[in-house]
Length: 96
Length: 96
Image (cartoon, rainbow over the protein chains, first blue to last red):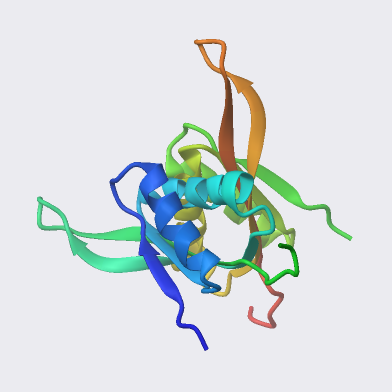
């Protein structure tokens, strides 16, 4: 049994997260990419780069979206931020 | 039979797309939200605002991601852009 690996998408360059996603996949783990706000676009970019350049048989198992509540901005008002969670895995194949 | 309604997410304010999504839902149609690049985050925002403020029983039927190829930038190089497609519907209920 292998535990899932979680990658939190933030402000670093896309390729950092591509690497952080590809390595656990190679070990047979599922990877859960989590992002909120503007990083949501980057999370999708990361999955697409992994699939196109590193793990051709990547499987996107699940994509879910949500809202994170209760973040307070500088003006003291409560703000909501959208979130995304993408679960990917690499099916085991018999290739060399 | 009702046709699906397609909403292309672009540069307009989020609430424009919230309205464009809510109206066909009220008519019993499925709505397909499509976005690419930075608008991906806005597409998720739109779905979340619709669900939280207008259509409490909103159902997110499917979320798929992809890459759109072959867009040429100012420097003449081919660039890829990530895309997202979110299908939502409002289940029919017996409420007044």
